[in-house]
Amino acid sequence: MILNGKELAERIKLDLAKKVQKVFPDKKNYVWIIYLWDNKSSATYVRMKKKFGEEIWLKTEIFGQEKEYDKLENVIDLIHQLNDDKNCLGFIIQLPLPDHLQKHKAQLLSLVAPDKDIDWLWWVLTWLSSIWLIDFIPATARAVVTLLKEYKLYDLKWKIVTVIWQSNISGKPLVDEFIKQQATVYSCNEFTPTEELKSLCKKSDYIVSCTWAIHLINRDFVRDDKSQILVDVWYGYKDWKAVWDIDFESVKDLVKDITPVPGGVWPLTVASIFSNLFTIEEGLKK
Image 1 (tube, rainbow, N blue to C red):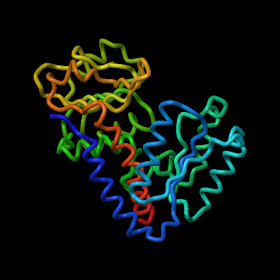
Image 2: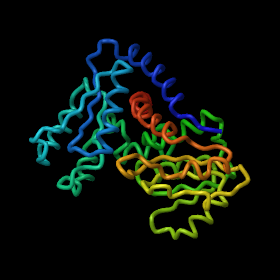
Image 3: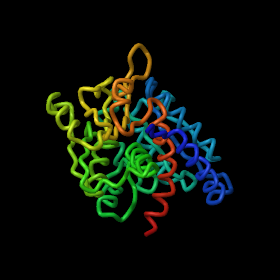
Image 4: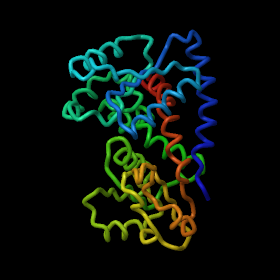
């Protein structure tokens, strides 16, 4: 079965549009995207976020391309302004940062107020989520969970799951969420030997790949009994075209369920960012 995230994202969009009009009817509120440089992958993602925000009737602004934001102190000032602005519902610091600001990433992300952190960048929300006080995970990880729940594939008790890559926005939070569901989870990274990765993938009920490695997962990594579920999260570029982690054509007939490329997790990631607006608001009131 094809796990179609695009259709689900459209349904979420309609629900969010109704929520926005009900909760923020005066249209004074907005979401801000701090985008500090011109990066091909990021530019596409930023446009998708802005378009989605506008389609749910929520003003979404892109800021940070101005020359003044080459300076760290000006970026810090902007973050403080948005933290204090009551009309700003939340904001995103688009990653990766330009090279000259990359070494300050932890500092910048730590400045984001928890009630404005719709992209789950601050440790406070991580902690609240880990002790079950708020149902909040990063947008990319949330997209995977939402998709699995939609297709009634989230009963992970006693299931074996391999998560490939250990980033803070996808791999690590997914491992935590799957453990909460009582799954046995293998967490792999770039240092996992290829043969070991193949072995882990073949014994797994679920394979979730969150790398940028082009066609990392092919028929050599899966069984041929049509019992496994494969979720492809990220992509890289080859000849200026997006190419995904999983070699879809080589494995699609060998597995039970698989995300299409594109149209799987990616559309849901943007929807999840805006869903997190309401998750934070409701969760922090508890």
